[in-house]
Amino acid sequence: MSTASHLSSSPVALPLDQQVVLVTGAGRGLGASIARAFLNAGARVVVNYRNSVDAANALAAEVPERALAVQADVCDAEAVKAMLATAREHFGAPVTTVINNALPDFSFNGDARPNADALTWEHLEQQLKGVNQGALNAIQAALAGMREQGFGRVINVGTNLFQNPIVPYHDYTAGKAALLSLTRTFAHDLGPDNITVNMISGGLLRTTDASAATPDAVFDLIAANTPLRRVVTPEEFADAALMFASPWSRAVTGQNLVVDGGLVKD
Image (tube, rainbow, N blue to C red):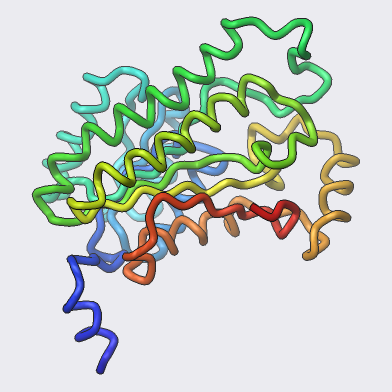
């Protein structure tokens, strides 16, 4: 049996070059790498940004026929709905694939983090709201279009700090832990609609805007403790997003894949 006929016997599994992909927080850092990976795979991509207008427009200009930069704060549900409507009008098709990457203002700087004595509810609330409300808004805004297509892919960006809090970023890790819970419960709810929901949990990436404040000694320590003896790059992380969105992962949902060079075994 050919691959094509085998896939055709299963629920709809759109190839990457037929998907319309929303990447939140795609103006810079990891989000830009993910957006570029999907563009390289032939997808149409919505490059969402909040403040990074120049960087987002520059990225979209690399493949102008298949990329669209759209400003929206993912914590604003109405702005997210408007963004998806704009994308549908522009591409002539609804968003099929949502990558929840947007991160509230945060820097991986262990010296500046709030420790257990200084941590406040406001620290936690900022991350819980930014990470989970943003993801919730993006998923809910895309559901009607996914159901219309009979196909949907949601990929949430997590962290390996659940398993290995080598630096205890209490607020950031709490937000991402809650997102893992939503990943698994949404997978259960949306599976009958042929919508899969998965998470990719990276470690410290070399290098993004968020990790720019991390000392080289920390990168070197992490690299020395991975089987690959190096720190994962944003481009390598983006490869895993392509996998979860592709037809090859059509039966995979509710999973958390750790992509950190083997540092953590989930």
